[in-house]
Image 1 (cartoon, rainbow, N blue to C red):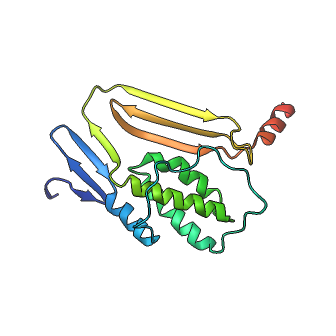
Image 2: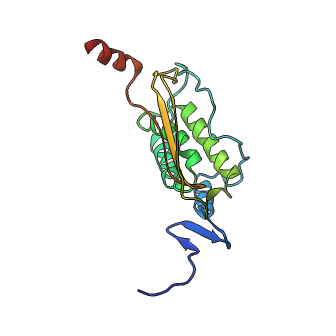
Length: 183
């Protein structure tokens, strides 16, 4: 083993330290994906996605470049390491990888604009009491299109976020009702 000094940058994650805290961020990676998408000069947006999902419109056309959509959504997966606030939005966009519509690509561009606004965000780790806190939330059948539920949780060790998850449950309300009637 060799002492390499203070950690500053590792696997695309920059580490900033002070006397009492560390900040992990992916400013460089986020800037690179904005450049790859041609959105380095886009206007920023304050939220990653709309709070109400608009129902699927039959007039909404298919996105002409599904491979582009898949590659752009894929680059966000790694960014969730230091920006857990993107997890739910990315999960939502991943549900349409096989057959994206124009509205999905519009939502993806909104996510890029949000990343532009949050380039300086990251995970902050500070010393504190070793108290474990967990929070969870769910939205039972909240998606108006397919009636899927969304769940999420986050776990803190002291003031530090150590684990998180956001996902849509794959079972629809109809499927769950069918299971309940069979019991």
